[in-house]
Amino acid sequence: MLNKFNTLYFETTRNCNLSCKYCSTGSSSTKHFIDLPYQVIIEKILNPAYELGTRLIEFSGGEFLTRADSMELLSYANNKGYAIAMASNGLLLNDDTLKRIKDIVGNNIIISLGINSFDSDNKETRNIDFEYALKIYEKLEKYGYRVNISVTIGEFNKKCFTETIDRIKKLKLPYNRIPFVPRSCNAHNLMIDKESLRDYFHPVLRKYFNGQVSYAPYFLPQDIYESVSGQDLNKDQVPINPNVGCWVGAYYAINAEGGVSPCPMFLDHVIAGNVLDTHLYDILYKSEMFQKITDRKNLEGKCGKCKYKFTCGGCRVMAYYYTGNIYAEDPTCFIDDLTEDELIKAEEETIISFKNYVRMAKFGNLYTNK
Image 1 (cartoon, rainbow, N blue to C red):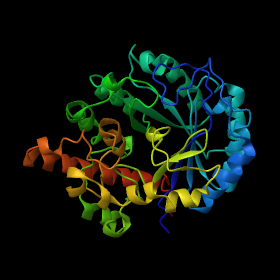
Image 2 (image 1 turned 180 degrees about the vertical axis):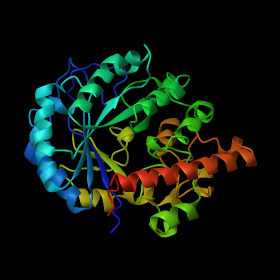
Image 3 (image 1 turned 180 degrees about the horizontal axis):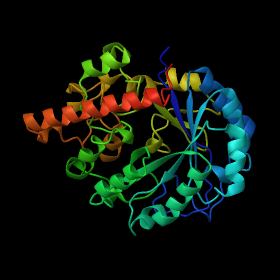
């Protein structure tokens, strides 16, 4: 059975031990927030999500490890049957903590560290030197942890993005890109635009299959995807085996107050309901927002007419922060700027990258749909 909402990004807290200038959750080491109680998380989030088919959960924050019950949550999720990921700034990943996590979940965890660039500018957007992040990675490697690198992309790192990904590739690590958005700050000028995506980021994203496939535009022909996945995208609407392009519909997010959104970058702005007063099933399957956004026939403009509508879908986050409309065409998409030969080349590179990713995912047992 293919599960539409197979991946949950859960911001368990807004508390943090850093005060990053552009933090998307508005966290700060000088602020204190009241966390949802452990039992509420179990009853309102972890149990219902698993019952609905969610199989991968990423614990995040703030800093997840600032929660006094973080180990208990890891234990419960592991025993429940979730595949686990954890986003961390690494400051609390000392030897004792790493041993304890290992005792609780074994190898059933991927730890995600953030590095935006391998230069002095990393501290501007991540609040720690990249050298420190690499030391954390070396410690994780020593204990046998699987590691992922999260790279937030924006105008601030477009010129060094190729070098950044080359360094990550040399470390033989997977990575994912996160588009910078002014979720909790007013730095709209740091968002990528169409030209930056076309000239700096996209050529790299479609080249390295270990960068996952969660980006748009995603130039994968529908028939290629369907032959690999077995899905009928005209029926299913959202590619989920594996997830590609815009992950909305395969992916959903819950913030520290229980608000549910189609994407973490929407949180605090685009909320379909709250698990504290509405069952998660009703939010994901009955709310107008989730019903509409997971039906790609509702996409507007060139996204709604595009031949890659089902494998790409356009970035809903970029559409929202540029236009205020989550269904609008993706204003950062540059497909209309490409010549026929350029589009063919981009499509060929995407197909190769996609097939390599599928082989890696199957070999590494990364599919959440079984």
